[in-house]
Image 1 (cartoon, helix red, strand yellow):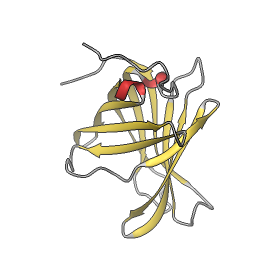
Image 2 (spheres, rainbow, N blue to C red):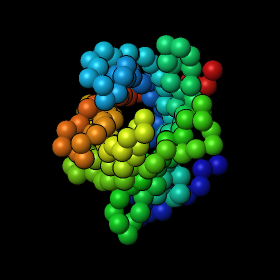
Image 3 (cartoon, helix red, strand yellow):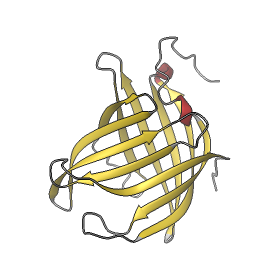
Length: 166
């Protein structure tokens, strides 16, 4: 039985609630000048939690070298008006990634974090685009120059589908 939602819960991520087939594109090497991408498929299923002030996105990623499970956890801070997004990779089940934090303006959500990649400090940016009548998209970009330039290294396009548990 689903628990009740709070009437004041934010609706920013309502566009992603449900089951999706996902088209992934991932840059083969990050922050190295690489221009070659690998494309693969996946599935996601997102449900509200925390009375609507959060959601969980269960993912299947069908990488060319094997299937991986992962989870995105999102929570909303009403006081700050921001969302935090954590990533949990099933290959490393004891560690959450550094959360990206941000908000939506119109139909685009921008979320940022300071992190480390291969021993170097970087900035991370997630961009969610959810324009009515189009498929939602997500992209991840890294910057190793303090945010002056960004390299997009992963994109996802979501189309309504069925959650795949197998």
